[in-house]
Image 1 (cartoon, rainbow, N blue to C red):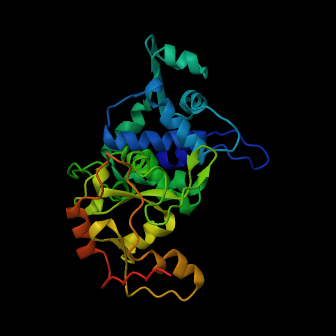
Image 2 (image 1 turned 90 degrees about the vertical axis):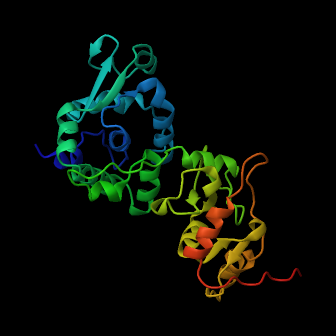
Image 3 (image 1 turned 135 degrees about the vertical axis):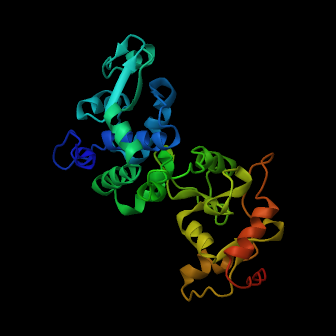
Length: 299
């Protein structure tokens, strides 16, 4: 059975080009949870809010419910649902799914195939991402569902257990900084969800950076990229560092980058630990490029 082809051909409602990524989103979420716990079941009442948020951020504009894919994905042969009464879904009613103790997880044959061939998970995830979402959203979406795509694509039998990311990191960091960029104050929302805001690791996760709030900072997409490239950093007194090696001649570059030099970070909220000195030091020594600019004198 070709599981990648099956994932590529999920049956979806379609009319006049209207997006319906409900099933792909649930399958991506399930793959992320499988990476974390291959035998775990997803209790509908426990994951409903996370699935609803996924649909709000990455689904269609029209209102929708996670009950729809939770029930209907079974028909594609990649998902199973059980209730307190045994195998089978009770339907698409939200109250019924909650009351019946409905749980879901990847179908047994698919779970067995993923355990035999770990890289299959990455190939399935990649086809779902490529078919249903633009590349610009892939990193954010993988983070939202807790999916380690690179390690999944490189997976091989016998690979030792990998450290798992904490899927709560993004929400905890964004909440700590009150949903605004710590460098520039950008706080954009689309409907009820943040847009263009990300949780940046100060000490990179790949280099043993923990998924702790004091190793994170809320940044807009632009400043996250510049932070990870070493253009920006965090100095003593939790002030913004701007590399002398950065060159930007436009008014936009000056306003959005060079003018940040020396500014105090915005946040976190009182009572929440700021970025730890050890993590700031690691970023300054391993990522930040060159010497920092001198802060501009106030006009």
